[in-house]
Amino acid sequence: MEQNAMMDAWIKASSPCEEHAKLEPMVGSWDAQTSVWFGPGDPMVTTGKVVKQWALDKRFLLQDYDGEETPMGRFFGKGTLGYSNLAKRYESLWIDCMSTAMLFQTGNWDRDALVLVGDQHESISLGLVRVRSVTRIVSDDRHTFENFVTGPDGNEMRTLEVIYTRS
Image (cartoon, rainbow, N blue to C red; front, side, top):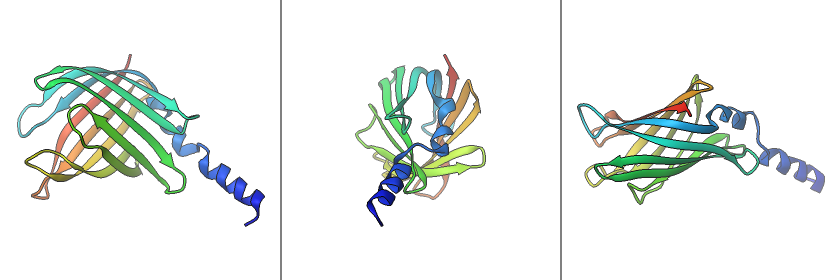
């Protein structure tokens, strides 16, 4: 491939595309209501403030979650979400103060939801688990996020729901 053609291909592969634009409704400041299930029964419900903003000329959506005190301490975390033109998939990385593990997930839109899947060391009792995350954009002022964990028995359980409402 000649040098100009290689440069054109590189520019196309490294530029934001329509898949990046699908994330635009999530940009902004949000009030978060978070429900966490540790097992059967009612969830622990907390609130938080979230800022989601573009980085690197709309290539990546950065999330900064600042939550309230919980019985385990104040919850805060950071995430990065983007679309890889080369791999043809969304890629996500999440870190927070309740773990030393990073959750890396990949996936794509499945009808009305962005579905990402990855493996994470969850807790002492569960070990390595499959984590499936589902994001739905309800409107310009609301979107939801759910996590489902597949346990050692092969059954999937919902462990987290976050309802984002524009501040």
